Amino acid sequence: MRFPKISRSLRQLTTHVLAIALGVVLMVSTLQVLPSQAEPAPRVTALDTSKLAVQRQSPASAAIGSTSFVTAAVNRVGTAVVRIDTERTITRRVDPFSEDPFFRRFFGDGFSQQMPSEQQLRGLGSGFIIDKSGLVLTNAHVVDKADKVTVRLKDGRTFEGKVQGIDEVTDLAVVKINAGNDLPVAPLGSSSNVQVGDWAIAVGNPLGFDNTVTLGIISTLKRSSAQVGINDKRLDFIQTDAAINPGNSGGPLLNGQGEVIGINTAIRPDAMGIGFAIPIDKAKAIAAQLQRDGKVAHPYLGVQMLTLTPDLAKENNTDPNSPIQIPEINGVFVMRVVPNSPAASAGIRRGDVILQVDGKAITSAEQLQNFVEDSRLGQVLQVKVQRGNQTQQLSIRTAELQNNS
Picture 1 (cartoon, rainbow, N blue to C red):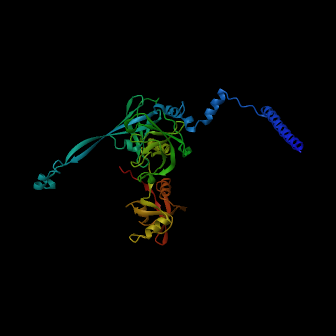
Picture 2: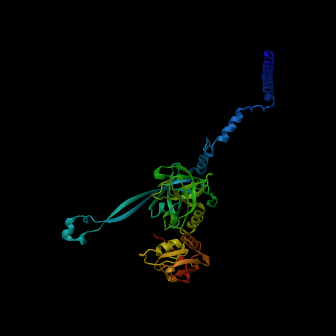
């Protein structure tokens, strides 16, 4: 009775042993086959390592590597960037007794005698040479009303500068120095090719620190002077985050290739890291006129205006204290008409909304300003306005905008 049970146990044990042995054999054979079927591991050479390092390098670190493109750009401009020092003498009439209560009590305010007093004002700016004969381009506000202009080159030479022409409307001026006919010239690029995000390199003499270079990008294009808060100018600025400080005015704004794309000019005192430059294409045209005529004639209408939208008009109309009801339309609202101006002569009134000029729809103050700027002196413009609930067609003949000075 016991032998059959032992026989079955032996058979089960033998089956388990054979199964384990077969598994061991299959595992060993698999380990021997797998290496022969696998791909060989790649060998990393020194050349491959350098390639990987380049691939992992960020664009910024690649651009500002050991051979900086900024250095190459600044070297291309070279010594064409100059410093401009100005002097201006103003005469003030002071009253030595105006603050003295004794004399006011016994002799009255009419007793005070006005005594002349001179004061010397000094200014600092930048500029760059645009012609080998010694023509320097800078900002109008740098040299305007200056009695003496001194141009200092990077190599230390100084020359007396003669202002050939000033245009306050575009804040541009041309200064001439007599330094021979072999001066370095800054390469002029084209501002029409500039795009937002391009490199921007500002060169000049900020705060009196000569030959200073700052780097940034183009933040935006066609930033109107009205948006910047400079209502007496007619410009669409290049905006940049390259540091621009007092003394940079008139210096060049360069692209990554070292070409001048703008002229650093406007600084908002409340701005942090925002600067503005006049596009070089505009400056080229103005500089040519200043060299030829000494001034630039700008046509004007004679209105102070505001871009009008339906929402803005509705906000005004719902205000119970509003002195006027405005049509809830798109156009240009006339806030004020300058006396004895072309607009006044044509019958434009405060509160009118300009809708069209020469059949073209006008939807912003900047658009109207540019339209007038591109017109000719004495050109008659057909202006459609809405006055209350009625529209009228008026003819306005442009006239020359007079210099504020």
